[in-house]
Image (tube, helix red, strand yellow):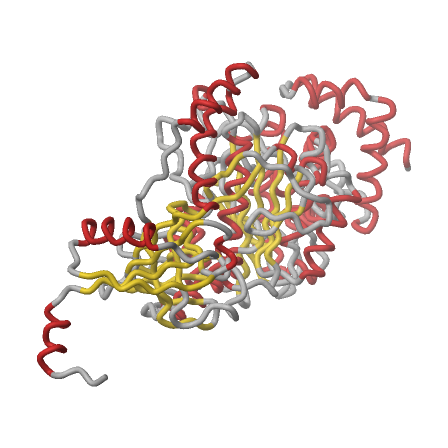
Length: 592
């Protein structure tokens, strides 16, 4: 029947509200009348137009959509509401009390008619969905799509639309798909059973070892501890690498950047530090961001070989993962580390690497149509890493006294430390260890550049015996590098200069270490004291490392009391120094 113009204008003047009902069994007339009365009063409409859709997923009851709002009056909705009212019972121990409260809750249970907002997908593609309708959604909130895929709000726009990064396949999301708020920020399920496991950025185990059985949900974004909650860094985080522990010490609660070109030993340095924490009551978290799956497997294999997985958690987001998962990976790892830190433990976390993390964020930002800036990175990329690294701290005694030490890794291009991301992170951290390609290919490993590396915590993060044993080693190496550059021009060298060059070359040999072989404190101290006493100057350069190993083995066999005094006393004295030098001299004389 064709409506005349008068009837059409009457309908337009009426406020007709469309109500969509999803159900397994359609409502009867009595239920419809109750719904009509409720929505007429709630929305002050003149008439209700019911659209009934059959959906087996509802099971029982009704899911009702009114514009961009959702009323969950289904059986599952009732169960969810009832479950929330039972959460307080978990802390009770008396079974009789629990049964009594359960009976009371069930008898007095009333279904809330409160609603939640619903949004609709405007466009989707490349792991990004643009939605409209969620007026009160917050930045960083997790939203849920009809198909079960989760996403995180990353862009809140003035025109009422929001940009969502997706944590799953977008093939089942299409224009018009519904999306609802969860009113929760991104988090990760966690428990102490997570040690020794490999998880993805969403907290799911990927090592085939079964469920973690986590009972806590820890937010991946959390404000950094304030000044009152911290105390100064004063305890060493020993890496077992002589060049670092002697000249660029790292303290518990510090953030020390590892920077250098690709294939210069950055990951090896971090893995050696994790291996060195064995039997030191330190929890380690290794976050792999955008690495090849084979590289991650190799790191895990190395850790297992040295029994380091027992106290380590690996958060894996390989290059095959979506940019959204690579983006949240370091925050998920930081959440794991914070969980242990706030339980009073010392934690070491490695971010490998933040260059790829910045690229993942740049990808998301460009897809969200944010304006590119320097090197196409958005302007807030500095805040991205600042809010991550600032969460590393040495907590005060009133805040459990735990600590989180961060070793972020950044890859440079042709040694350019003045690029955008390297300079950003250098300004955030408390120092950097620069690994130089030229030294690496010359066989100097770890290839630590003494001139460009620095620790802004310094001697405060060293034990007394290490601080006093180091002496002028760093200055001697700097002088050696300078003299070496001039000596390349040729010409005769005086005896003093020649001896200084020989001493510097010997120091460089002593600082070489095989990978996955961290040095204990007594070995480092004995090496440093003997080196500064010029005991290795007359040893042929090719034999220095062999003589060093023989000398250290001799001390461990025949002077174990000295080794024990260094490891447990950790106090320097002239008597200790003289005993080490005298013993070393006798060993070298007998060796000849």
